[in-house]
Amino acid sequence: MAEMQKLTVKPYQFGPFDSSYYDTFAVIKPATISNEALQVTPDSIGNFSLTNRSGRIFFNQTFKLWNDDQDSKGTKIPQVASFNSSFLINVFRVNNSVPGEGVAFLIAPDLILPPNSSGQFLGLTNSSTDGLPSNNLVAIELDTFKQDFDPDDNHIGLNINSVHSNKTVSLSQYGIQIAPNGTKFYVVWIQYDGLNKSIQVFMAEQKEQTSPTPPKPSKPILTADLDLRQIVRQKSYLGFSASTGSNVQLNCVLRWNLTIEILPEKNKGKNWVKIGLAIGVPVLVLCFLGIAGLVYFFYKKRRARSDPNILGALKSLPGTPREFRFRDLKKATNNFDDKHKLGEGGFGVVYRGLLQKENLEIAVKKFSRDIKGKDDFLAELTIINRLRHKHLVRLLGSMAVPHVPPFKPAFIWPSMPGPGSFSITSSSMTNTADITPISSGWTPQYISRGEGEGEFSDSSSLM
Image (cartoon, rainbow, N blue to C red; front, side, top):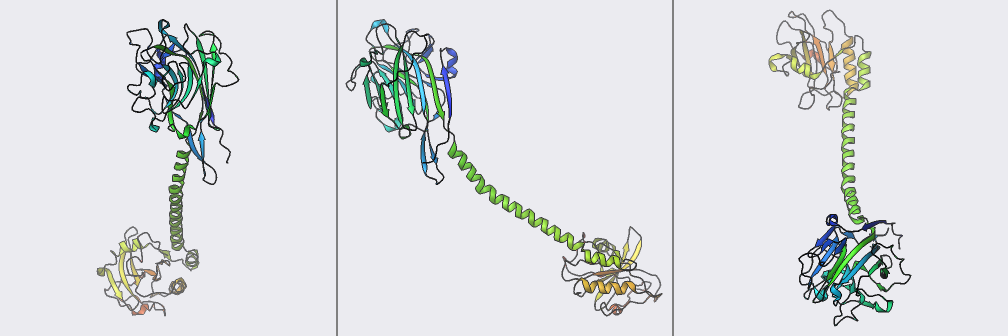
């Protein structure tokens, strides 16, 4: 069996009791707090009826008394909290009358006092509920009135869901009288071992109410096997109950000390961790993949736009042709409007344009055929750029987006006024000699660009 986690132990000390303890305890009427004691049934002060009464007083919080832990293999290991409860009591006969009925230390599922639980029922059950497993209660009773099912009128008993005790021990053999004539004080120690699932009860007389607590006896009065996990609710209340019948007594608790192991909320925490991991890890992986994909996309796009081979080749050309952006040429030619068409041939169309910022008129040759990659583009660009003649206009610039297939570059020339004052450069690659002027007074200056939606964007750099 896996080693249990070391638990935190929390101690509580209560008493002497005054009205401030109404904030700490759930006092179910007719129980009261008075005369520095928890009066579990009404005391003799005030306008109270003392006969046939029952009451309960609980520490006003629940404690987790058991848990289902798991080892590394997922096997459930029951875990039950241990606790020690000690209290000082005075069970007082009113006018030295016959006492009745008794007081008990109680573990209960709720703060409800069962109706008609006076007399023999000790505030634990009633005639309808006695013995039901749904009571989920365990009590150590100090009984002062003999019922048909009791051994005598001065005994201690272990009660489980019923006033019929599972085990009883007469106290007379120990020289203890729970409710003697006169006033006596007794300390009761209840020790529950959650690991071994057993309970022990000790009892000793204390001389006076304010006297030092006597040492706990070496031997218990009552011992029994008890697995709280099989009986009580996981979260239960701890406190006291008592009753009177035709005969009455004052059931007073003067001090109460409680030390209890605090079981962690393990299962809930583990479940949330598992749920968090089950949801969080896939989400993080998807986010990482999404971010990585975007980074890769923009990296490739930027690299394609600024291909160092093309940029280096262009900058090495004599005169270094100017680089244009497609959106500027699109604006200059009014989106390549047919009204700006100057001429066309088998491999492209020439458009008239105006770069407004520079007040520069240009001609743009937009290629209509594919060029087989950047090497062909660079070869053609190099040839055209090196041409020099008095009847030829020099290449002004170019643009190419090699990552957008098919590879369709664009060339630009400055315009020259005067009809017939120009010749069109011809090469084996561009076949620009096929272009025929449409309007006089213009010398074609070319920029080529591939047709079709998606081949260029306004943010594209021209090379």
